[in-house]
Amino acid sequence: MKKLFAAAALLSLGLTTSAANAALAVGAKAPDFDIKAALGGKEFNFSLNDALKKGPVVLYFFPAAFTKGCTIEAHEFADATDRFNKLGATLIGVTAGNADRVTEFSSVECRNKFAVAADADQKVIKAYDVVLPKHPEYSNRTSYVIGPDHKVIFTYTNLEPDNHVALTMQAVEDWRDIHKHR
Image (cartoon, rainbow, N blue to C red; front, side, top):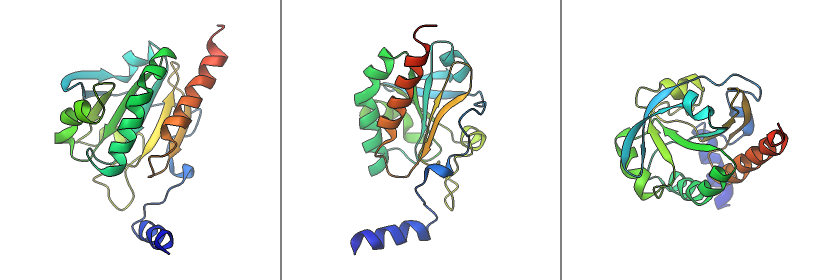
């Protein structure tokens, strides 16, 4: 009964959890962006174009720093960062929610492992069409893997933090398997 009530509450808010909600399809050109980010509490400028010169980029959007689901997801991505790095992938999280707390979030919940960025003006979340339905002040929980050719390799939208890390890792591993002999 509790699960049914929770599902009804999510649906009433327009917070559906479906991979079909992802805005950019596999094969689409990923919009380039430059954004102020933080890693280990230190701010720097992140450029998608520059990151793609090193290999694929795992770009994940999350609703707001220090919320339950976003903290769980940050911990899981932090635990997986070394493995992503070994595969040549760069990881960055982006949020439009509580942008003022992203620098702190980068060291506390991201455990100094990967960069997170504040998209207060919502340019990036709009370019990737990941504005959270019915709560446009937040970004939807959407994960992308973008290849060095700027093409979307993988996309997944689901408000539950489960599976984002595993699915993006699988997409990066699949990409690496195809490209390791080139």
